[in-house]
Length: 528
Ligand code: NDP
Ligand code: BG6
Image (cartoon, rainbow, N blue to C red; front, side, top):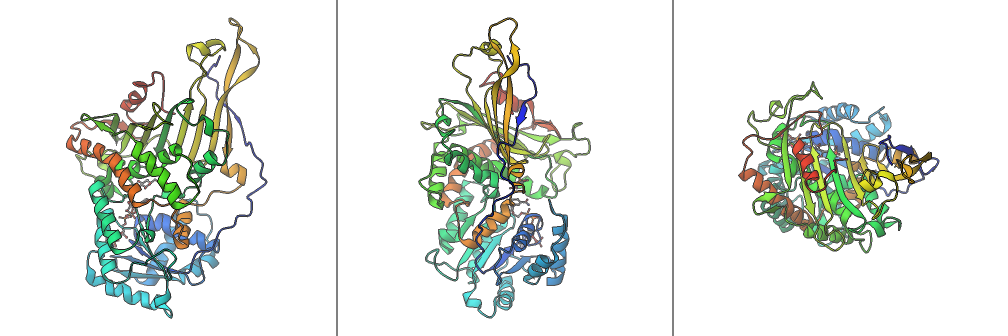
């Protein structure tokens, strides 16, 4: 019988004595051109990732960087701005002056409006100075870190300028690649248009559609955990799994990105990409090899097996918006955030139930939730196992024994925890002949086991783009299939803007309607 004691942590289960020597390939020589180089993504994620690659000596001696945005700045002002931002970035400790000078000496800035083709000659001129003396032989990596509404014009003008050209195959040199940030379009139609535009100008092998969740160490570990071990795979199906919960919760609000978020909302911002990626990795069949197309083929099959979210004008989904709440007294409500309309009906939280109609998962619900200004930052996949068919221990018969849980933590404390029942030492239930049981947890934490923080997602992904490894990027059919899943829900909600948008207090775990989504189907279940 469980008395609801706090789980006992039996960790770490491995003692590795520090991080093993890792072999990481050095990037190809290239000039990287970031469009949107003064924006939030460039400051907070891309520059720290480039700096870390420089510290780890993974950039080529001939690496160069050109940042482009509308704001007028000199090269030196841009370098200063990036240094200041780097020193403010998450997890930053002390500046490695050697690595910074190395990077800064290869860093340039040019001002241009990507919607205006007339400004591209200035970029070409600057590149000619940077790329020299072998401009024709330089590999180019174009990175679209601009608002999604600017993607099409940037791609068109970039191709028209002659800077980005089609190459017949991935082995051609010099290479020319384009990284496109998410959300890739704002609907299925716009994603189809953007794919058509890109593939009219370059080959699929040149396009890297980024979803930074795929660059997270713990997300890649889902594949290793599932397919490098034979322990869990036989249980990974409808026979043993009751349901799956996938959470991407953030404690922050929309910060400085209110304008972007008003256009996006939580479904475009998090579900169409990050949450569906987590779902596909948790649910996919084993790929024939860890190769880009083999992995992507299996992920697409999962997306194609998802039952339509909207049926007869109804969806098993809940939306809500945060308001000021006593659990986070300093946090403003969404409608008071900078760049947000006072009567906005943009959801900042959603929860939904998805069903995968295939042999493995028939009848196993997948519950997904994500939101801003929630109680805690955590992203994880929880597999809840079924209870044994016949329980012989005390109150277990009445269903009070907590079920077995496998939690794959994406962040924070990247790792895996397994909860199971053990006999409570020295106890025998007073009234029944059964034993008293207690849930305990075995916990693997990357940092404890390997003694280091995993690489940032952008560090991994930037290196992959420079090496031409597309395994962790999404293919055109994958991104389109993901829109096919989410578009009907976005449409349903925009056709019926909630007159009274359901709300949740900042610092809470979201609206109570999200709890009902679970309990309506699984009485007694709760979000974990
Ligand atoms: P910001 O609005 O902060 O930055 C946009 C950048 O694009 C600025 O440098 C801006 O420069 C430039 N820009 C915009 N329009 C033009 C134009 N017409 N011509 C030239 N430059 C232009 O956006 P974010 O950095 O937040 O986001 C960029 C992309 O990254 C988006 O697709 C977003 O969804 C994605 N993303 C962002 C994340 C984040 O944490 N920020 C995380 C994951 C993805 P200027 O003001 O000088 O015009
Ligand atoms: C981005 C979203 O893609 O992911 C942001 O645009 C969100 O709104 C971010 O904050 C979350 O990423 P992470 O790595 O902090 O979970």
